[in-house]
Image (cartoon, rainbow, N blue to C red; front, side):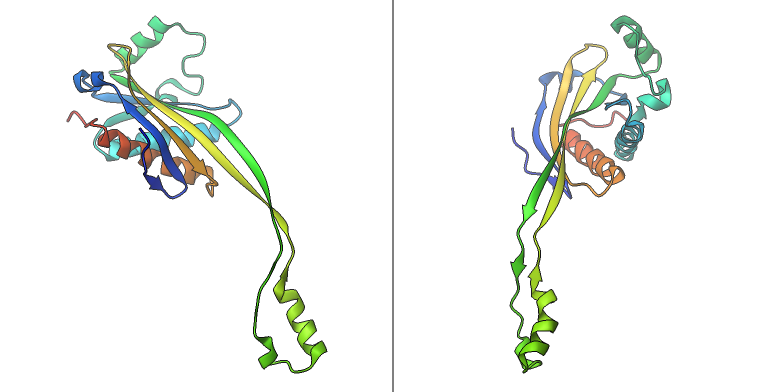
Length: 199
């Protein structure tokens, strides 16, 4: 289903929930983000903001970096990871994945603006020299950046996908703004889809 919901530069493009979600008991959620290894600050921002927003909504939540460090589950198998999560009291994992990042360059043609300067300049040359730089705007290139994200909520006990959402963010002012908007957007959609704090 397509969701018409916007939050500044971010929108949800698709959202889905499983019927299993209503049968799953979720007390504690761990947020884990997957981005390129060299973008540590973006990963940290995304995890921290979503974790904080979940807590603000009444959920018990923790980021994977906080509990397992930056390398999370590297070189481990499924049973080992699941056991670690259960030992930490985690009932569900909410992932954040950067699916794609696109940069587009657009040429913006020059424009001519009308302005009634004849009222103030009755001699041609005085008018020409005053107005020329003000009415002719040269063309230029504008670069835009789009981020495409996906988040999935997995139950630890049944190992099943409970919820999935895809989003698009257009030209965020900073990674902090991007993470802030994303966290709010996902939390609101989770609640809209029936996930509520257990306490």
